[in-house]
Image (cartoon, rainbow, N blue to C red; front, top):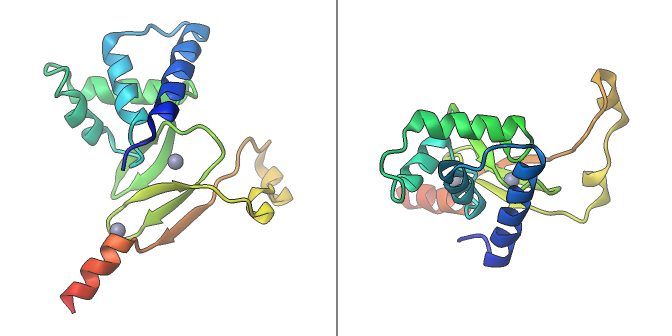
Length: 153
Ligand SMILES: [Zn+2]
Ligand SMILES: [Zn+2]
């Protein structure tokens, strides 16, 4: 499943605007790297983004992709989701949302919740500093893995 086109367009517009605001050079490579992330709901690793961007920019190196992703994350334009199967995963969705993470295959998907308990910052978080965002990480076994495991039995 892909991200709906109107959301992708909104992300692209916000990205262009943020690059201008932060005086980040908008190279063709950088734009294509971001676009691959913006159209995906997978929270892809750098290797995956590289493979996809290479279809349009055959000479781009994995290192370039990685450096750009790290820079965009530093600038707050994308986020690093954390490690899954020992790889950094990236996210273009900067809105308030939560993650479902499959412990078997590393699938990461966004979900939203209207449950207010999930949206309230625990005051204990202030022990270490000023909280800026809150995200729930639900670990589990995705439907695909459950079906595959059942098939093996
Ligand atoms: Zn899975
Ligand atoms: Zn996400």
